[in-house]
Amino acid sequence: LYDQIRGVPIEGWDVSNRSIILYDAMQLDGKLQIAGTCGIAYIALGKGRSIEQATAECYKFIGDVQVPNLGFRTDCGARVLKNWQAVLPWVRA
Image 1 (cartoon, rainbow, N blue to C red):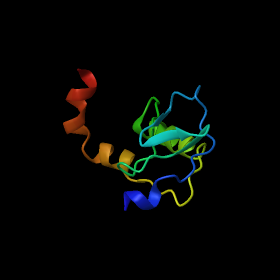
Image 2: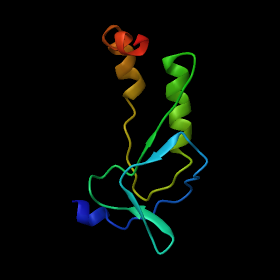
Image 3: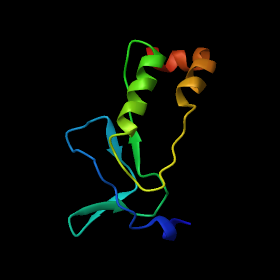
């Protein structure tokens, strides 16, 4: 599977955007592309005064980077809300 995604281009990433962290990416001939080691092109981060605001910001940043046939999770904020009591001690640490 990873051989099939190796070399897929990553476009629109801006080094100054600290909310997008490249993960399985490499630069070849001056162009960003999927390295093909794990299938995760990048991680988007969001922050806000609520989980809903942080989630919305995260998904806004996802749209900044283009990867053909990219798929991403849409349940992350909902999972945190569902399990908030378990997450709360980590947030306060």
